[in-house]
Length: 137
DNA sequence: GCCAACGTTGGC
DNA sequence: GCCAACGTTGGC
Image 1 (cartoon, rainbow, N blue to C red):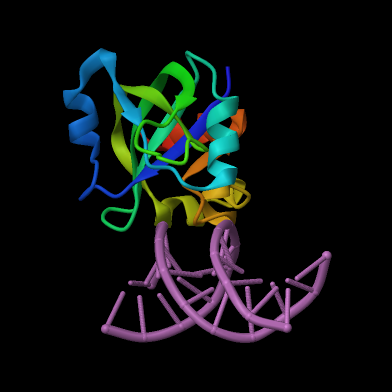
Image 2: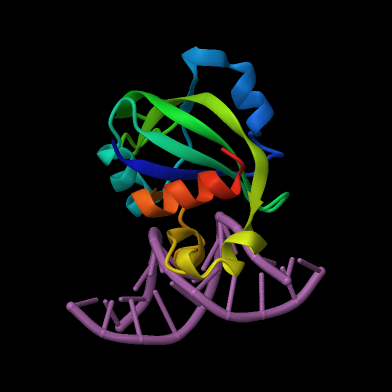
């Protein structure tokens, strides 16, 4: 299984809205970046991802599961981009803030810090474990 | 194919 | 609201 991190502005799509969709999940549409697209195409059903709130909050708030692998993004008229379906798994007991990630030396190489503008990022197994631990899981 | 201009993202 | 980073566009 691989690990990922997806970003969303809570004013556009929040963790609470994701949770409200239940196990069926919701299409993760609107990605218009080729690096992010390649990451989504590498996602497999059952992979896990951190759900990160950008701008407001700036923290990892929960874990989602990939429930449907990539298919053409229905909101993309050009047909070039793809989306996946993700469903909320569980919230972190304590959100892991960007400040906390920056303060942890072992997370200095995280894409969240290195590639701050990328909206769909890979996370290593080591990073995953540590962030879960920091989140109280 | 290079590169300047411009737009977008996201932290501060 | 500003600005740095970075992707995209378009003229040459």
